[in-house]
Amino acid sequence: MSLRARINSPEERTGRGEEGHLVASFRAKLLEEIDLAEMSALSPAERRARLERVLGHIISREGPVLSTVERSQLIRRVVDEALGLGILEPLLEDPSVTEIMVNGPDAVFVERGGRVEQLPLRFASNDQLMQTIERIVSTVNRRVDESNPMVDARLPSGERVNVIIPPLSLTGAVLTIRRFPRSFTLQELIGLGSLDEPMLYLLAGLVQARFNIIVSGATGTGKTTLLNALSGLIPTGERIITIEDSAELQLQQPHVIRLESRPPNVEGKGRVTIRDLVRNSLRMRPDRIVVGEVRGGESLDMLQAMSTGHDGSLATVHANSAEDALTRLQTLASMSDVEIPFVALHDQINSAVDVIVQLTRFADGARRITEIALLESHGGEPYRLATVARFDALPMTPDGRVHGSFVHHPLPRRTADRLYMAGQPVPQAFGIAHSADQLATREAR
Figure (tube, rainbow, N blue to C red):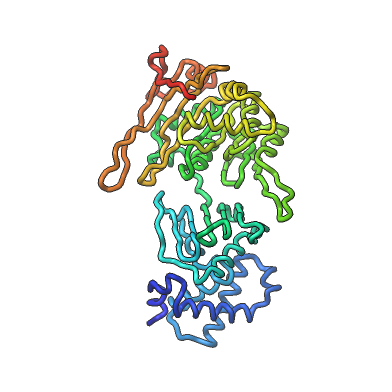
């Protein structure tokens, strides 16, 4: 059987069989012939080029006889094993792959186009998977072992990585890599069906008029993508501070300060939390604060910033509806070390939050804005939300697609006046409500 045939066979795709032994053999020979000290002084690109050149000489000297394509495939496999991430390397170079999930050595899944699929790939052994994991975490000066069985990190190239190993994982070592999302504009998101043009004009007006906006949604709904698109609408003359656990936002304005939290080191020291960064950002004279995700006591600091002169701030929160987003913000704010009654937190949210943009990921993988809601309540009133846009979904069609339509409702007079004072027009598709009866309002818990 030719090398190409072996590469395309199920046995090879699992990383086992004759080709697997061939790769392991040449990898060992390659490591024998290179000077590790010299290699460490080279850049990643130079290192890969040097290894490919040395391996080419080894194959020419010792065989086997291969075609040009087969030779290139073998060199790629061996160098990926020696330098890269082995069978994961091609997946990281595939722009259609947004998430890589390794559930032990025998199960590799990816997400493409919002759908998860299993690939016919396997690691040769659990040891090979652990070597790959150790190589990944070592690039960010982290380690994973029985004393530290969970690691959450960001690779230098931007991917977010989570590792959990036995004894915490009963299915073997589990590796999850989330790809760095490409930056989309709101106009591009219209093309993807995430929103329509009137909603774009409304969101642009709300950002320009310095409304405080919370982007809400479950995991994988596109919160960071939308937050990045909304951040792109902030005027270029403003000083923007972004605060994230894993730096993903890609703002193009000239005056942007990017802050990223830091986990504790191997001795358990040196941790810097999102809350520490939010507090510090208030001393940095920000015009806007953009928080990648609030998930703890920093919610209180962010709410206080929003209600004390830092209008136009943006943040995301994990929640399944606009109502849940408010409740979750209140719960998270209560997790701070400052003891504040729930009633006072309720008042703080009424004062600070202006808009909630809810995102949903549908069964066909599509991610859409399913609601834009304005918080109309004041002081100690129960939360009162006015829906100004929503997506009405239809049942899934036989081809597995979810269709529907965007619906628009009149804006409250107070919102329209605030847009007018900021020089922002009210999109014609919405209009202005002349009475409370025209508003699509509801009370939340």
